[in-house]
Image 1 (cartoon, one colour):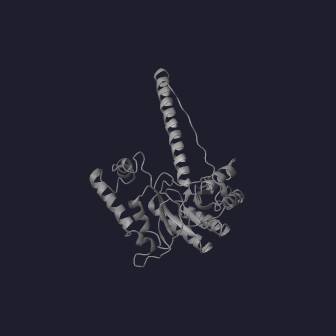
Image 2 (cartoon, one colour):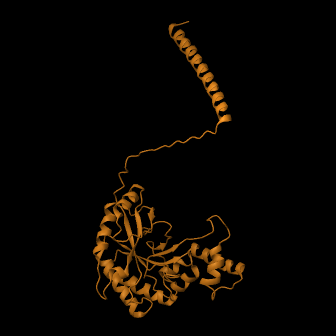
Image 3 (cartoon, rainbow, N blue to C red):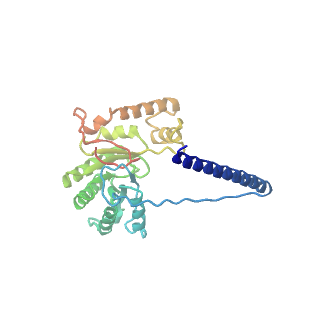
Amino acid sequence: MRLNDAVFSGWLWDTTQRMKTLAAVCVSLTSVLHSVAAEHTLTAESSLQVRLPPSPLAPVLLPDSPFGINTAFDPDTPDLDARLKAMQQAGIKWGRQDFTWRRIEKVKGEYEWGPYDQLVEQCRQHGLLIFGDLAYAPGFHDPRTPEGAEAYAALARAAARRYAGKVDHWQIWNEPNGGYWQGKPEEYARLLAASGKAIHEANPKAKVLGLNMAFCDVLWAEKILKLVPYDCFDIACFHPYRPPSAPEEKFDWWELDQYVKSWHKHDLTPDYPDARRQTVGAQRRLRAGRLCGRLHGRNQRRRPDRGVESEAVCLHPR
């Protein structure tokens, strides 16, 4: 036997004996633990903390990122910086932020932008781009009227011009098909057409986010699309809620109890199976792009920079 072979054999024998001894100790320890467990109830607690280095992209503005959140900050949120820092560490790059009309126009015809100026800058410092939701009128404006729509369009024009290059995505109201509007589809269509035109004129690079529906309310969307110019908005939004149904459930409580019985009681019969077939069929047509063509002209080709998106993810042009 060569020397190296002899050394290796000795190491192997020694290692084998150590492993046998360790195995015997483990068996003995297991027996002891079983004996103790038979007499006492054992509890155990452990924790693990992993510290990762900060991402080099954390403070960078990334328009193509799909990760966003509904920020809904007040401009005077006391712990705003801490919240923005947490969002930055989580890799969130987009925020849906209210620009509350009644906070901006407290006196008719006068805009107070200061608090929102600071908010926009703080967001950008933490790598967060935002799209502004212009909503919630002061008491002296009613956006459902022609005069109110004109006042809203003036606000939208001023916002688009002031924040051009910093906030280039503007949402026209919040869930106008539901409780935040209390008006007719024709009234929202007037608001959308006027404000969309105003934003595009003030900032040609801006994208206008229209519809902004609670749930995928395709019947309501069809009514709006028949009434507005094809180029008054760029991105169609909806909020894909399904409470209290889970995403994987076939049964949709909201569709039965709200969509049929309440929201569209004049459009659909109370016969749920028939109504459900109509609704699902309309949703499929929307996904297939048949409705999407109406966003951009009934007889015109679809523009590549316009599309239908969901606010389940952050919105940005394709």
